[in-house]
Structures are given as C-alpha cells and as structure tokens.
Image (cartoon, rainbow, N blue to C red; front, side):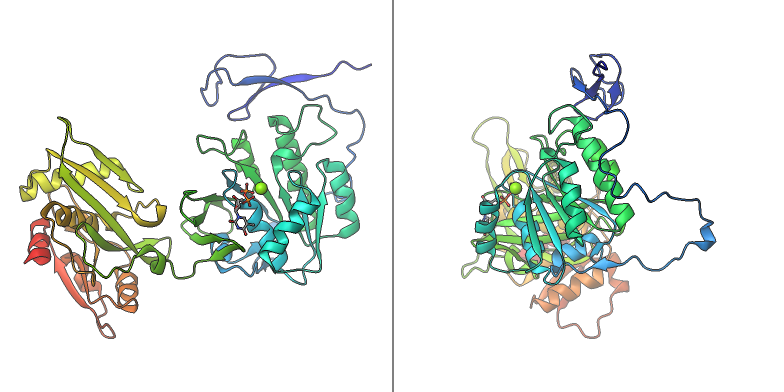
Amino acid sequence: MAKSKTTFFCQNCGAQSSKWIGKCPSCFEWNTYVEEVIQRESGKNKSTIFSQNVAKPVKIKEIKSGNETRINTKDQELNRVLGGGLVTGSLVLVGGEPGIGKSTLLLQIALNLAGLRVLYITGEESEQQIKMRANRIGSSNEDCYILAETQTQNIFQHIENIQPQLVIIDSIQTLHTEIIDSSAGSISQIRECAAEFQKYSKVTNTPVVLIGHITKDGGLAGPKLLEHMVDTVLQFEGERNYGYRIIRAVKNRFGSTAELGIYEMHDAGLRQVTNPSEILISHRDTQLSGITIAAMMEGLRPMMIETQALVSTAAYGTPQRSSTGFDARRLNMLLAVLEKRCGFKLGTKDVFLNIAGGLKVDDPALDLAIISSILSSSEDIPVDQNICFAGEIGLSGEIRSINRIDQRISEANKLGFEKIVISKYNQKSIDRKKLNIEIISVSKVDEVFNILFG
Ligand code: TYD
Ligand code: MG
C-alpha cells in the first residue's frame, strides 16, 4: 500500500513546508505549522465533469471582448458592492463573523432570483432549518434547490444533474474533497475545495458564492490564500448590538472596493437601507450639546452621519480618550490642534467620541464635525440641528478642502439642512445654482467657534 503523504501547512497564511518549522517564513507567525495528510489518489480526479475542456492558447486580438455579463441580484446594495451585479463565471467569497447574517443574506438572494436556477449547498444546517429560514424571509423561488452535502465529488454530481445558474456554498470550511485525506476545515481541504469550485466556475461560466468564517482577529479563517483564489471578497460586518449590517468589498476584480451596502436585520430577514442618512441621524425634539452632523462619503455615496462627543473633567490624573468608529490617533491629533491653535484646555479633560450606527469611518471630511461636537460638548452649548459640516483639519488648524464637495452639498440640501460649513478652499468649485442651502466657508479652526456660538 502506498505510504500516506503528509505536508506541513501554516494555519495562518497557508504556506507549505515539507518539514515542521517553528516560525513561518512567509507570515512570520510562530507555531502555526500543522501536519496534514494530503495523500492523493493515484490516477484520476473524480470530479471530471469539466476537465474535458482543455484550454488552448488564443491570440489576444482574437479574444472577443464585450462587457462581462452580470446577474442582477435584485438587491441594490449587493449589486453596488459587486460593481453592478454578479459577474457570471466569478468566484465570490463572503466573509463574516458567525451570526452576522451571511446565510440569511445569501438565502435571501437565492429566493429573490425568481426564474434563475440556484443551488444552495449547506454543510452547516439541515434542509428543515433552511426551510424555516426561508419561511421567515418570505420570498420564494421555484427553482431554488437546497442540498445538504459536504463532499465535493457528490456536489459536482448534483451540479451536473441540476445545471444551476448560480451556486452558493455555506460554508467553504465545511466542505471536503476525497482526494485529500485531512479533515474538513483544514488548510489543505479549504484550498483544494476552493480550487475545484474555481475551476468549475471558470469552465462553466457559473457564478459561485462561497461563505467563509472569520476568525476572532478579523481574518478569514485560515486561508489568506482563499483571498487570492477568488475574484471578489466581500466582508459582512456590523456590531451585533445594532441592527445594522454593512457589506463591503475588500477585493473586487470587477468593480471598485470603495462601495458599501447597508442592511438592517429584522424579523423577516435583511432589509436594504437605501437612504442611510435617515438612520444615521437621530431626529430629536430637544437640542443636545456635543452632537453634530457630518456630510461624509462612503465610496461614491454621500451620507449624513451623526458624531457625538462628550468632554468632561477627568476624574483621575490621566485623562481618557476613547473613540468608537473613528481612529483614536486622529482624535488625539484634533484635540492637540484645538489646544494649540484655539487655546482650549482639553489636556485635563476626558474626551469620548462616538460615530452613530456602529459605523467605522475614515473620511477625513469628518474632522470638522468632530471638532465642532467636541467644542459643543466642552462649552455645553448645542449646535443647531440644521447645520452640517464637511472639512478636513490640518495640523496648523487650517480647514482643508475635500473631494466631491458638490455631492455632499446636494445630499445635505436634499435632506433639508439649512447650512453647511465647508473649507474656504472648496468654495470655487461649487455650483450654487439649484441649491437651497446656505454655504458657510471657513479657513481656520477658530472661525468655527465663532460660527457655532457667535
Ligand atoms: P445567520 O444568517 O445564521 O448568520 P451566519 O450565517 O452569518 O452565521 O444569521 C443569524 C442571525 O440573524 C441570528 O442571530 C438570527 C438573526 N435573524 C433575524 O434577526 N431575522 C431573520 O429573519 C433571520 C433569518 C435571522
Ligand atoms: Mg450561517
């Protein structure tokens, strides 16, 4: 009998070595090498439904160009993140923490695509559980097949019979292929199974969506290598305590990675949030200090978002600075600018900053709103709810211009804001014609104070 063959795999990055090593030479992690049995069956690979197709070299000018065909997923948020729909023949990986709603999202997509033959393969739940979930979601697609199977060779047999137009796999970590001996979820299994589906999707031009788990530290469980194999990596995230879920593209061969989709989880599945500004601004009756609204961009989409600050006298010697959803180092920089350029003594104060909705933002245009909410909380004077802000702050206290100012202003205008505070240097580029909003331009941080509190 042939001796079984084993290799060592780094569980972090998937690098391979013939002997055990303590420190991975490719990702420099310690103690990540695990021995896995990879005994290949001699002779043929059983999943041969597509291996008859042998590729030939073609001259580049003979390749027919044309826009890639895309499947409209009937979900505007997902379409946008994918760059306009699901490209046929693409391999998409959807990653996210357990319980975030990956299965719900993809079942929902499968059920909404009436008229398209969808095969939903589940290795985690039974058919009954999927049915219960489908009942909750409520839509139905006559041509949606559910298959509870984890062995890829069997899966390909069913695929051959059903000839699906879209394949969803929940999740890649539960699959295993016969040609490798190690257990499901190990690096070599994940790699081999993904490779089989990659080949299948390219040869048959069928889009395949893989669901992948995320480890505690936020990486896709195990395989960095999975990210290299797929065309698109989507990250599904959100604070579990908020109802909002965000999907963003981390890698996309067919579109921009700047886009973002927002959903709200409710008792009948995920609902698309098409106007995010509505949920990110709380409409209050009373005026509260420390709250301002920023006109920010997420990808190509403008949205208004609430920033909240709380400034209070530090109870202990060292003041605390904490921020949720915003870079803490940038907050420290803004505080230093306020201290140095405007003379606010914030060095002895605790400062807490919070971005609404559990969103993580990194648009520098938020700076202006953030210092305004800090000033408002520090002085305990509310800022008018009808003002919004968009501007970046430089180290010398100057307000710098930002990109896409027109889009931000028109979004603010559309949502009924009366005033927007922007940088003086952005002023020239504005088309004021159809605007019904007062534009206040500032060049220095100290001017902001006068505008806010007169
Ligand atoms: P699920 O899709 O199972 O997450 P994942 O596949 O990412 O592990 O979603 C699980 C959570 O979503 C679960 O806690 C229940 C909740 N949920 C709702 O709130 N409403 C619904 O309609 C559904 C189907 C799930
Ligand atoms: Mg799931």
